[in-house]
Length: 398
Image 1 (tube, rainbow, N blue to C red):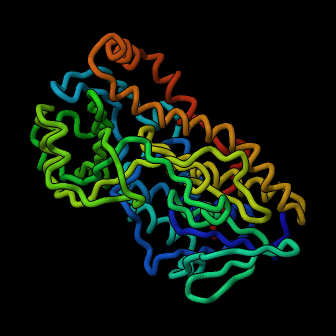
Image 2 (image 1 turned 90 degrees about the vertical axis):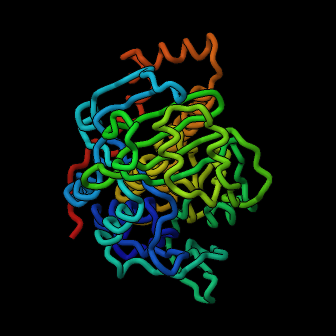
């Protein structure tokens, strides 16, 4: 393991930064977290933690805290977005199929639980990185408030809009995927036409789809993402939405869809951006993690989950390295993560094309495949059943 005096700085107090801090502590290492915002607050509505991430939430002793504010969907259903007919239904839960629960949870609840477990004294707010320099194995981080900090290892876990990545590659390399999203939360009681409210559901149709799942301890709130192929002519990640523009694209869809997307008032439209694949996530002693390394589009719901995997693997590589082996640990981490994350990136990206097919032979074949029991094995099992650290059972977060 690297030496106990090794200074590890994590940029970003989101899912990646906080879970990395927990994974490091589990193996006897500590880190300081630097967060650009002046208060802990997550952008977005909710997140779904699948078994490939939640198995570590359980291992870290946070399962009870999560269960009090989250909901495990009872099935996965695909429907035609226009008439509501069931195209495919798979009734197993994450717990039943993969041995760890699924959690539909509000992002704010997720962040608060993780931050409390890490300890607020380890999280430094109002620290926006502006640059970094390296000399003799030491990284100096400069912050916008004029302060700086030194570390032996810096981990850029600052999300899809990562400043660390931009500093590393020299420019903002985001790529618009051709699709926009509208996010919202709606109480189940306000959706009288919604069938099967306790499940994850995809309502699919030409050029668009609606994904939703329940969140909260009682599963009484629905989190949804409405996705539509639309042009984008801004450098920003969100733009002002035209009044009811999301409704005009889904005119004639099932009443449950219309009820759901009519309930909130939308003032912003989100660009569903991706990042190009990188052959290396590191620059000396600075390394990327999570969305900063491999931002995913949300069509597989794996962004947070793959990020947790990254955190677990990086902590393991650091713990297995020689005391002066940071460089070797970084190399091992990248070697173990590049292929899997690239595969999940690709799967997430092409899923929208599959869901958005127009009526015809291709859509008919897709529907037949979605309904097959073999579809789960071929398309989801390799993602959700994955264990990033199968040989380590220690839990010590004190």
